[in-house]
Image (cartoon, rainbow, N blue to C red; front, side, top):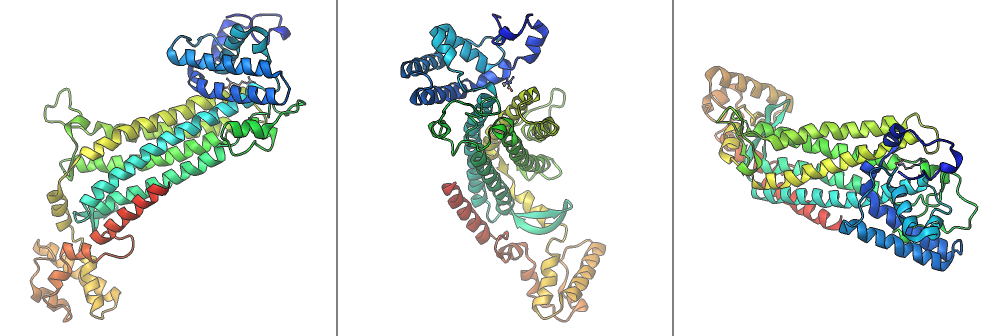
Length: 460
Ligand code: ARG
């Protein structure tokens, strides 16, 4: 490594262990494009304001564009000994342009530079993640429309509760994912403001134009306080939190898929291409993808926790602790993308075993509420109807039968209000079809939900 940038103040070389410890290039090099874009905006503004000459400004911009092209073509490799991506690009620029290169950092600091780069980088990542979540929701809409009439048991406490449709179950996840997209939109809006010009912490004596750099970078406005501009990492925490919430949704869904794949449920079967075998047990077909998503949720939650904990005791403004932000937030972003990319085709190719869902729904007295509602509709108060139905269920259990098969005499013995029409009223098909209250599981309602979600997606 050549002389450090700050060599003037120091009488000794920094210990090589400190250099290695301090360096972030191994993980911040991925922001090269954003770093160069920020520098181009800065150099443009410096030239326009006459803080540097127009010709220097143009030379800097040309040099930065060349560096970008050379990195992309593989001609220029990152120097692992550089302190960070910002130092690397500036040093490279100076190597190429000489003294002109040294003018770029006028009225700028790595503190506002890094705050900008992460924002620009994450802004792009959010777009990608949103596109993936949208694809997932579209896939759910497709499968839900195919299964608007597929009856399955709905559970509470993991006990069979009331009949729903598979389409209804899937659309519940679609709603959660729409909120995830909403949260990302909010995060993006708050993130897309420009810290450039905050400089080290106290702004600058140069007559800079912060509006100009902000708009050149497609940001909403320059951040209004220079101390905040370099100190703020809320946007990383907010994104990590939005991603952690989304991962929790994927994880709950994964958990259900894992259960549904078991022989105890066998509601679905994953495609061979999205399952794995065992090295010893020849019969095994494991839902590894979903288990890994459940597992990776832990690390994304951890990333969020890392960021919160890292920031909680820091005085304003920049502190080196903040260099730790990148590995955490990049890990969250990388992992959610990996999960989504695999989860979508896995869902798209899974086989739904309707008969098993139907058979499970036929057990467990999940039409008991409907039996009570039958009496209520004939004028009985709900609590009385509830008690009578409870007695009928107990009777069925003692006779090892179901409400559907219980003879009408037994019904009548409990209440004169029962007639032959009770069997139609408690058939699973009726139970589901009649649950057409807004948001309910009826085929009609599910198709309505699919339509609504598709329209909502169009506007996002
Ligand atoms: N690599 C540093 C980081 O990621 C860049 C900012 C350094 N600023 C400083 N004053 N040392 O946080």
